[in-house]
Image (cartoon, rainbow, N blue to C red):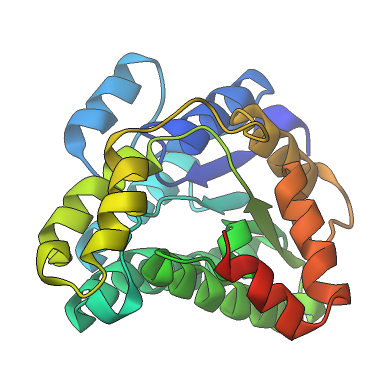
Length: 278
């Protein structure tokens, strides 16, 4: 296939990584369906020349309708799916209501699974396909205050790696991308979820919230020294889509690559002590 003949559905394309990847792939000749959760974001992307179906991972009806819109436009084919949309809910695990976990899993795991299951028969029928899931360094490294997001990404990584094994006897390739600190709106977008679910004022960890998490959330400092722009993820995505035999996963940013080595080679107790001080 020539690049101009290839189509891709990108979720969470309203900003950050998804938005940048949509532009990069369109510039490379892909037919990009840049989906968003909110209709106003879809309208903005349509004004930029994208085909932008509304697709909300928390709404199964929108998943079905959004994919149907894509398949109608392409005549029933889809060469690639980039699962990217997600949100976070920071807070100590003991302060997270179970419903907060249900909500984040609905979006970050179950919605991805729903969409992926609907795409697989399309790719089987056409005889090829790429499914790329955007995880995180927090999908294999535990980190304080990130229990909900980390748990969803750990689950996603397990599900994705098992799916990749099961798809090994098919022409469908499944790949993980694991970004570290990348410029996006995930911090800002996490604030409403934190304010809705976490009663930090009545937490036994109130002093820790005031001394650490609240400052990170509401008073962000200078850019992280290792932080990269979304173009770093776009580069990994291009490789995952174009390489005839892509790797199971691509780590993006120095901290992610370093922690990949640390988690494999260093004693678990040493790693736990190190992470407890971060």
